[in-house]
Amino acid sequence: MNKKIMIGCFFLWMALCSFQPLPLTIYFKFYFGGTILNLQNNYTTAQGEQITINRFQYYISAIKAIDEKGDTTALSNAHYLIDISDSLSHTIQVKSTQKIKRLVFTLGVDSLLNLSGIQTGSLDPTKGMFWTWRSGYIMAKLHGVSLQANTAGKRFSFEVGGFQDPFNAVRVAALEIEPTKKTIQQIIIHTDLSKWFDAIDPITIAQTPNCHQPGKLAMQLANNFSQSFTIASTQ
Amino acid sequence: MQYVKTIWVLSITVLTCTGWIALEKGLEPPKPVKLIVPKGWPSPVYDFSKNPLTEAGIELGRQLFYDEQLSKDGTISCGSCHQQFGAFNSYDHPLSHGINNQLTTRNAPGLFNLAWQKELMWDGAILHLDQQPLAPITAENEMGETIENVLIKLRNNPAYKKMFKASFGDETINTQRFGKALSQFLLTMISSNSKYDKVQKGEDRFNASEQVGYGIFKTKCAQCHAEPLFTDYTYRNNGVELDPYLKDLGRMAITGNAADSLKFKVPSLRNVQVSFPYAHDGRFFSLMNVFEHYRNNMQPGPTTDPLLKNKIPLSNFEIGQLRAFLYTLTDSMFLKDPKFAAPTAVITNIPPLDSH
Image 1: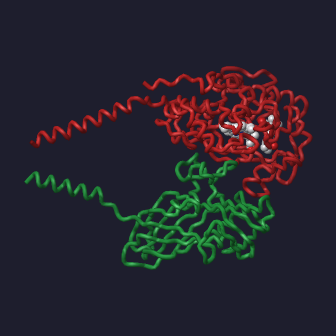
Image 2: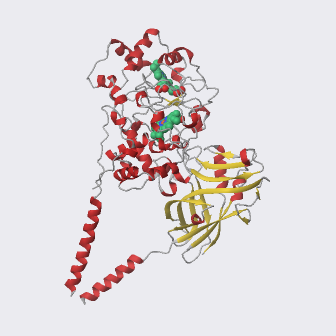
Image 3: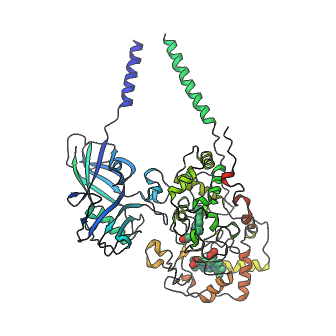
């Protein structure tokens, strides 16, 4: 009798140990306007400028879910560096939860982490997303070439950062989700890079080919960038 | 039968535990070092709980500080621009030399009492001491290197692997540990043994000129160069004119606010006797230049500090007394302390550490 209880307990314990709720997988896909983005291709911005993109990286953090009652659940406290050239970074796994009505995430790096020493992992300065001449992360980076850029090599380079008022470039994206009965396990998010140039503030490369410090331009680019995200499907 | 099983389980557990303990034993924990806050000073602003000082960590920091591998062509170390006999400024250089005969755009300030300094650089661009080394390493006109490359060079060096292990518990060499180790060394560079300090402690006395000079200092200078650190770490415009070549607007470059134009961090006046040339671009070659600036040459502009709207009246006599007082801020022990000098053994010659 005793033995049976012990064995029973053992299996129960094993089961508890192996039980983990299924994660929520978020996929990022990249578009320019209506078409899938290809790093070799030419695109035309809303201002009629011709561009090719060769680098696109950004941080997302503080991923949360808000349910129908308005309650918030933190899905992840990590910082993810999404890099268009690194397909592994396009998929992230976070905790899942029921009845998600809105998915909310921060575009950028928590302000405290900008000024408390050197971080590791995705926030390691060797990732090239930390300004070395002044404290602070580059929250999002878009590099490319444009016929309209009056610069060496026709390059344009947008590095959006700044975490202190009045030039805090951290933004929050909040995406509505169709309510479903079952727990969502997969979300596909489309990131439309054409938004960088016109979502809120029109940007022309001819006028501002470079952004390398916190300030008004970085704030405008951050506003535009924050409008790039839409939910394409959930499962 | 059941007992046999229990004995098996027990003995396996015990064996794994002892094995684990034996593994751990090979590594002595690094010896902690306590930072002594000089009497009457405020508490440091650096958060030591995230980077506790240890003997091994400080020594590693010193090796890194004097290692020329940190630059692209292996010619420049931190110590090339920050020289001990000039209180770790670039001695007698208005601007410092980086790789390929390039000059910096600012004067290298002395380095001491950094544990009390919340923001670094003349304009406060850097907000944490650990992040500071990344700036000169990656600046094209300073060390011209990438962080990644520096880490690769260190990882390829067995002596460094051992030192990182001794300091942080394993051989991992990453940006964070690199910054922490350099900070450990920099944080120990405390200058608090000048004649002024001895007088404050009642161990010495000012002579007549020094005493008069101290009085003048307290009425005319201490509002900004506040005791005991001889700076209040604020950003102010002390009437410097814009240099037409450097076009350095100081704090405004960081805040983007026109009201901060030409404001620079108030520098400490400790060791000022040896830290010439002075000001953010080394424009003053001597203390006499500085005194002339304050009493005659300065150009009060819209952002000039209100305390200086009428310049600072100073007679020749007062200048003599002030100078005598400022010389009491020289900490000759600090300037010669072998703890801060280049390590006698270059890293590659270091005998392997005894790890039993």
